Image (cartoon, rainbow, N blue to C red; front, side, top):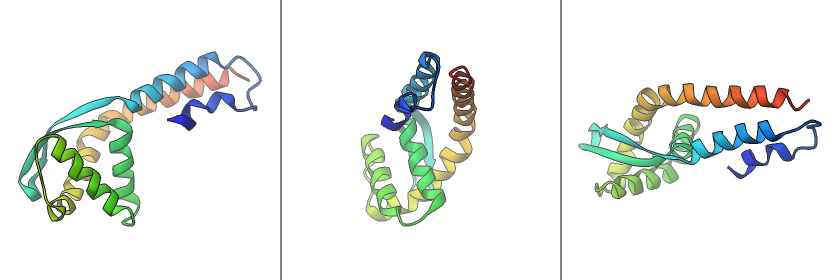
Length: 133
C-alpha cells in the first residue's frame, strides 16, 4: 500500500491534492482490511473453513494463480497458513490440491462483490485526480 499512498507525491499534480489523498487513503485502508470468507468449501480436500484474510492478500494470491505457476509454492504455503489459522491443518499435498478451489471460491463468489467496490474506489480516485489539474 506504500506506493498507492505515495500517488499524491508525484510532481505532475499542480493543484490541491487533498481530495485525491482522501480517495487514495480510503482505497488503501479498504484493501488492508480483513474479512471472513465464511463456509469456504475446498471439496478436493474435504475442508470447509471460515478464512480470515486481508483483501489485498486474496487479490494477490488469486492474481498469482491466474497469471503464472512459478509462484505456486508461495500460494500453497500461504493457503496452508490461512487454513491452519482457521483450525484446519493440512499437508503440503492437500494445500496444492486446495489452490484451484481456493481460486474458484474467491474468483466466482467473493471477487464479484469486491469488483464493484474496487470500481467505486477507482472512480473516486479518477474524479479526485481530475480536480488536481
